Length: 107
Image 1 (cartoon, rainbow, N blue to C red):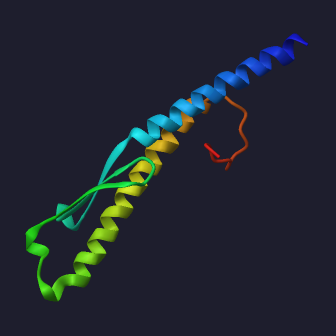
Image 2 (image 1 turned 180 degrees about the vertical axis):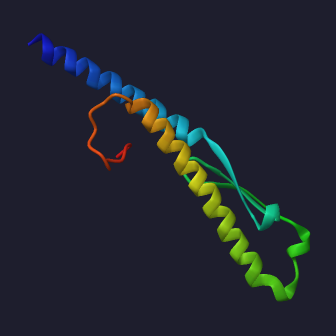
Image 3 (image 1 turned 30 degrees about the vertical axis):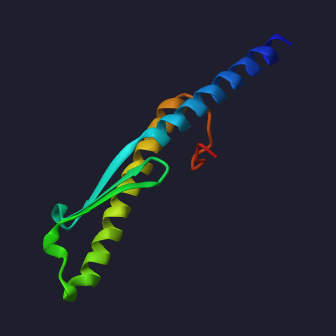
């Protein structure tokens, strides 16, 4: 019976840590760039875009498609960075736990 109570305590502790980690990830701000820094996207760890900067040299009527592609690339760069930070925080939190390979946290 003691083992079950101890396990339940650890589960509650892990749940609290997981909730804190999710809040930390949501509070993260990452920046993605494309075109050698001509386009910059800022976003939260949850994927909400906070800002977009575009170098004025890209405002040419015949280069609209290039600008669109650069915005998408900068957003992807920022998203990839946010996901990498979230994965690192999850690894830190779950270090030593017997979690099956390939299982992603948080759920």
